[in-house]
Amino acid sequence: MGNVFNTLSTYLQYDFVQYALIVGVLISLCASILGVTLVLKRFSFIGDGLSHVAFGAMAIATVVSIIFENLEMTGAAKFLRENTMVITMPMTVICAILILGSSRFSKIRGDAAVAMISVSALAIGYLLMNIFPSSSNVTGDVCSTLFGSALILTLSKLEVVVCIVASIVVVCLFIFFYNKIFSVTFDGDFARATGTRADTYNLIIAVIIAIIVVLAMNLVGSLLISALVVFPALSAMRVFKSFKSVTICAAVISVICSLMGMLVSIVVGTPAGSTIVAADITAFLLFSLIGKVTGRAA
Image 1: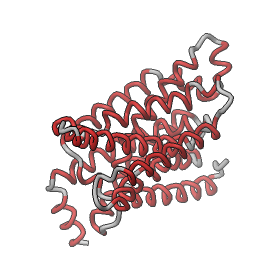
Image 2: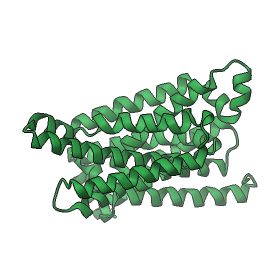
Image 3: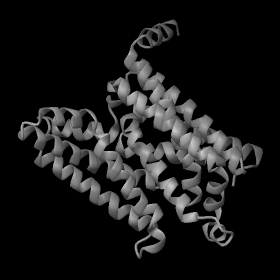
């Protein structure tokens, strides 16, 4: 046990580990509070779908940086390589709006829209990464992007600042529009009938989720993002029933699992993203057991 604490204290002295813990906790917090809404609206899979969109957008950003480099625009190429969010964020937000905000007026709705957009983006992204490789190890780049790998340990100070600002904005928006989000979550048609601009708030939810997804790619990778959205919400629902209590519990569970997962990954040497998801799975099983014992499980 003493060796474990010594290892943790040694690693916690490094800036990149501190950055990773800060970003991991903030992303998990944001993903969990919106996760409750997505689960209740039956859009649980949107996190996974938008993560594929972000993967494709990141591949496009890489291609654009290569084009800039070939045109001897080295400054622009370097900036884009180090700040892929410039392209990834807007494209992901647009696709989120198409899926959540406009699905009500489209002939392709719900899970079909998510599947179509996500698979298309994933395929195009992988195709572009093979046609325009940014390094000699394309397979490693793809694996790192999909599963997170060590991306969370390579964050720059600017990326940490962006994550902190974005997280504060997400939490403030959720608190400020809490009553409206609650209304459109349970019955969008009734909310419209009572004068609430449900479509506007659906767009706000879509934009927030897109921001969270792009930020979370560095934490758990594209394929594991939906776990941050779904598992804490489902775990909290095993024990609590009100919207507020489920949201608060989900946030606490997500932050603890993220923190524990990252600390374990540091000590044991396992991938951070996969370890965090394993912690979320453990929490879900634990809360399911508590729900059955107390008789609160659905």
